[in-house]
Image 1 (cartoon, rainbow over the protein chains, first blue to last red):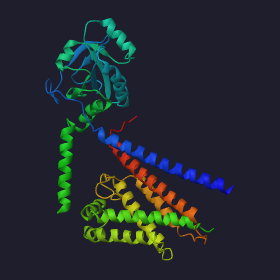
Image 2 (image 1 turned 90 degrees about the vertical axis):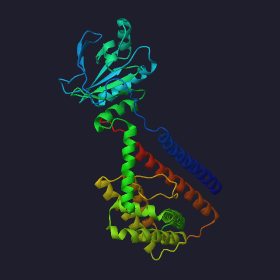
Image 3 (image 1 turned 180 degrees about the vertical axis):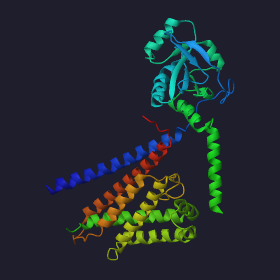
Amino acid sequence: MTEAVVVSNVILWVVVIVLGLVVLALARQVGVLHERVAPAGALQPTSGPKVGELTEAMSLSDISGRDITIGGPSPDQLHTLVMFISPTCPVCKSLVPTAKSLVNAERKRMQLVFASDGDKLAQHQAYARDLKLDKYPYVLSEKLGRAFEVSKLPFAVLVGADGTLQSKGLVNTREHLESLIEAMDTGIATLQEYVGMAQQDYERSMKEKAS
Amino acid sequence: MALDPLILKVISIGLGLMFLFAAYHKLSDTANFRVTLLEYQVMPDLLVSPASRIIPLLELFLGGCWLLSVYLQGLIATGSAVLLGLYALAIGVNIYRGRVHFDCGCGFAGKNEKEQYLSGGLIFRNGILMIAALIALVPSSGRELGVGDYLTLFAALLAGVLLFGAANQLLANRAAINTWRNLRD
């Protein structure tokens, strides 16, 4: 009997230590993962309208015939996130649900509009049905894409409630999309600018303390 | 109720190692520890310099006594609990002030370790350590320890060190994740 208890105790201790090692390794892996995945913002093209400029109001109608105005001051005080997508772009398909969930979290102050171009209306209608976009306006307009100089997809443009361009860029992940909203909230256009400011802040405070 | 001497041994060696590593960490980089103490803003600036010398020596003394099983009639246990409580209080005050983005100065692995920001988890951790220190105040029975007990002691310490390291890592991870964007849904 005693022998059985001793053996079971030894086995249990071995298991506890191995489990401890596994937990530690897992925790470290999460930490390393976080370090490797450095924050990255949306890639902002240098061409096209600049951030802070007033956008021109454009009256369009979406694929189900509703009228919508994109750009210019918003009558219901909402920011507008315009997502440029296309049925031929695979990344767009995975990013659409992300954009929907992000704007849903910010729905009190933001509306989402999808935009594309091309003349095959039936194809776009099928695409919109497939991605369950019926709640959102989906406009087909080459003019809109040209106004913001969209050259690569998926591209997002954030227009403030006052009609100024708040941020824009090529977006591939939720983080990129969030960076557009973050840029609007903080007034800091890019991550690089922010890191530079934080670095200066840190150096200044360290100098004050050392002296 | 008397405490089994094995439990007392596990606590005293565990806390001893912890205090010695903490003291080593602070002594190996005194300038940095002084900056950390300044960041806490819990004492007049004039006292920071002497305190930054006294605290590591105090930890060294406590760690040495724990390791050698010198308890000084419970003085070491009470002193350790008070010191850990003061740390927790300083962390709590700064969390209340909203000043959390500096290293807590509670790492154990020398200069190379990443910064660990303040969080409620650290207060919880210190609470657990305080309870462990106070358990050592309970008088222990005079049971003789055998070979099996020493094996258990070793295994328990090893498991404790691993879990302590994992808990610290998870706290650091959480602080890092908290710098991400918070969603309002």
